[in-house]
Image (cartoon, rainbow, N blue to C red):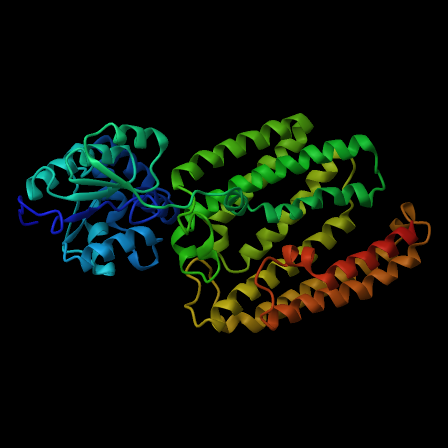
Length: 479
């Protein structure tokens, strides 16, 4: 950058930080996670790079990454500040601790900067290093600077005007003690609703499947309800930890999705570092509760965590293996519920569960693929499905769903039904209800009216709730 040491306030350059300021994210964490998700063995290379310094780690993590600057969550308040500076005729520069390659990609995409600086393989352009470079270019007090964290204090101490955004109380107090004019941009703090969205609390209804063995075995006692309540909370916390891991790994893919781009991490509403702390804390709390239920329940939850983590990092990219895995994850909840209250799981129930949940997983894939097709988006990069697969996926969903009805009908016709039901003939009323419900789900997905998980959809769909009520009354009448 050319030196310009005696600038008037009106012509004073505006220098903008990137991570946490212009971009509501941390690109070092992003690039490292993306690299690990694509190439898990790169963890060894990252460790070796870190031994050479943080600059070397950044260079290694970003060197092989296909970086897309167009989908990043840019901060509107910072962009407005840049626009005001440009209208005043002031030059604007981007200065970041991210690698030169990443900084250049962001600068080229936005096209609003007169120059940029970034880190290389040996120099980490942050804190005092960044301050020294800017003083060398513009002189002390010869530039304004927008930043967000403690590393920016060294730069603010050398600038003409300090502009902060998403500044913590501790950093703001230290900035206030400096003899420099300070201004704070408006930023939105994450609300409890934002955290609820990140934790996927609306998905907790899936864990009610733990109650299925309780209802199926007719063992409805206060003690069993307490145990299953603890198990339910345990599964919810474990699921939330995995959802956070999934969102951290899928940041780039989520930003290219029409609805997932609004997830708190993809949209930059919650700092990645906060999510990295939240995931293990939720995991720990979950398994402490699980240990309180029973060692066997703890083991099942551990298996659930292992399977869902494998799904997050690998299995969800494998065609049809992904939906079979989802069906298994739903079924594991039923097994966990049975183990928690000490009852055997009926082979009939397990077989029915595998088929019905496979149908729901296929409906989910169909709805996601159809949405992308209608919006003329590219085929999902993290799913091994093609647009021409839509008809086959719908057929598989219907077949799996109808097979679950067949299994239920065979159960009604078997001697086993007499163990729990005095009037098993009443269960026949459940079959047409199941046929209607499954067929309707497929039809709704085909009409592009389902934009969420089928189970979550069913919890808020009037016809689905009515179907559950009728089926429930038939089961009660059969007892």
